[in-house]
Length: 159
Image 1 (cartoon, rainbow, N blue to C red):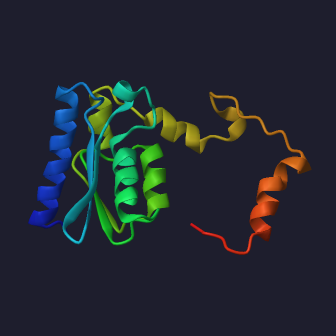
Image 2 (cartoon, helix red, strand yellow):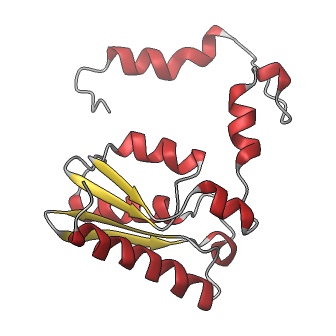
Image 3 (cartoon, helix red, strand yellow):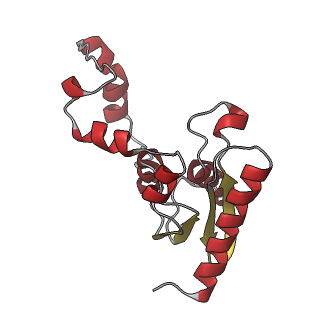
């Protein structure tokens, strides 16, 4: 159930998105991450200002929140996004494992504004051979060394 506090934090994400557009930082996306009713991470889209295709608001906020918490997990946190997360951000969100995600607009709203990620959803559903970008596997046992090292490591930080 979405509360008035949720709406207030969601407004902060929307405000970050608007400020980012006004200040030419990037696309119209903002995100705040909250734990125990306190903002611990925030970000706006920085793709064009940083020339970084991964600098989406959610990724920026996740990095910021994890740095603040000193961990790579966002257990017990709520992520508030001005828009439904794209496939890349969705993957990052699942890796970070917040408890909740609340967003203000849909991916269809973003698509209508020129931010259409439907092709990524379509590509994910295809077999590797059918994708528009060529993916090729070159398998050689010697390239398994990092995984063998990991398997033999006694103290592992599993995530």
